[in-house]
Amino acid sequence: KAGVTQTPRYLIKTRGQQVTLSCSPISGHRSVSWYQQTPGQGLQFLFEYFSETQRNKGNFPGRFSGRQFSNSRSEMNVSTLELGDSALYLCASGASGSIDTGELFFGEGSRLTVL
Amino acid sequence: KQEVTQIPAALSVPEGENLVLNCSFTDSAIYNLQWFRQDPGKGLTSLLLIQSSQREQTSGRLNASLDKSSGRSTLYIAASQPGDSATYLCAGSNDYKLSFGAGTTVTVRA
Image (cartoon, rainbow over all chains, first blue to last red; front, side, top):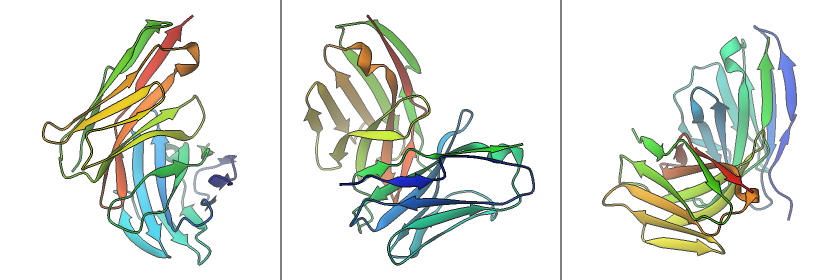
């Protein structure tokens, strides 16, 4: 059974640009959530989608957005990049449809560097 | 807002010693507690999931306990090996999201 796939794995952007990251969950999983990991702030929740609906959103500015497609694949977008957006962006896949997230499985992440 | 704290931040032990990693959370209204392992530059690997109705879970050399009333979880790793060197993170689940601690970085010396 394939795991969670995130693309691209590494990317370098300059300030002001935008970036789109992709996440393909484990087959059959309908929940996809996104997390930002930085040395200073640790792992912080960005948003969660289930069956194309955003069910929760973390405390991030509107420059961070996401969506989920009918095949459960998800994308997140960051516009007008800032230096502080440099981070490892992790996607998690889950089977649970209830408020209990259930066990989550993470991808290897997309490492974004903003210059 | 859920606050998750992990103590200690770092731990170095000789091979064969048992490891005890602590996690505390402020909001007892969690639905489950999950422990993860993260190797440098990698994603998170799920180790154990404890449902809110459970007190502990075991997998091989790993055992995790959960006490919701006191807001604590403990991960025990028996007979540590150099391959156990990694950062261990705990996370409480609520409202479709995980709230993570900062992690405990473990070094097992051969």
